Length: 259
Ligand SMILES: C[S@@+](CC[C@H](N)C(=O)[O-])C[C@H]1O[C@@H](n2cnc3c(N)ncnc32)[C@H](O)[C@@H]1O
Image 1 (tube, rainbow, N blue to C red):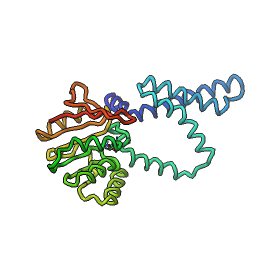
Image 2: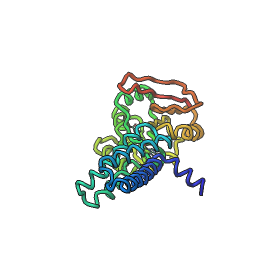
Image 3: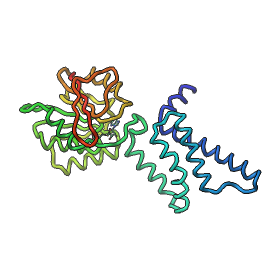
Image 4: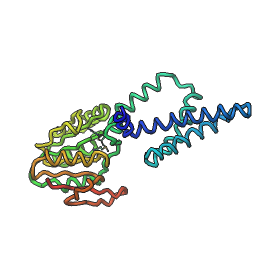
């Protein structure tokens, strides 16, 4: 039971939720005590602010990154606003369903959605050997913008996108069909269960969380001579063979390993 609780607490979203619950309990208690001594409770705006600030303080204690503080402080105000606007009840389950199917991996693998830019695509194209066809895979391809850019420039290569979020997978399939590229395949799949042996080039743009385990798995399963590029995220203890710095607004760094 204790191990199960510790595992659950490794998910930031659950720690964030727990912080809000504790903050709510604290604010209700404060309001009851205040009402007892002065005969009136605190103004609603103070209660919302206290709730947000207490949740933010608990989040810091639970080790959540600093941007969670903005979420925690604004969350009680958003709930209150939704009550004031009297939104229909079905909006909430629908919004939750949309968030789940889109940001599927933000909860499990702690990988949010952000996209590779065109400069990254151009740098990757320079890394693909000229005059020789090959196979390229994007692990966690999102809406497939990068794959479409590459596939148009290299019709002699085959491109595969792996995506676990159903909404992003569907969007990627629609975009690939609309692009007219017939050298791209998109699979609704988990990267951990993907066969990578026949790929010559694997690209990922994920987050620091999965990188050590992913590198271990890929370095055992990719074929000798293939290459792995991780956008922005290195692997502690596994120096890259090359780091390519792009002159874009993000200062993108591509970490390249020769397998
Ligand atoms: C930061 S986005 C990168 C999108 C795209 N590769 C790009 O560079 O534009 C990471 C993507 O990986 C997907 N993802 C994360 N964990 C995954 C997993 N275990 N299996 C499949 N896809 C995953 C996410 O849903 C998200 O679309």
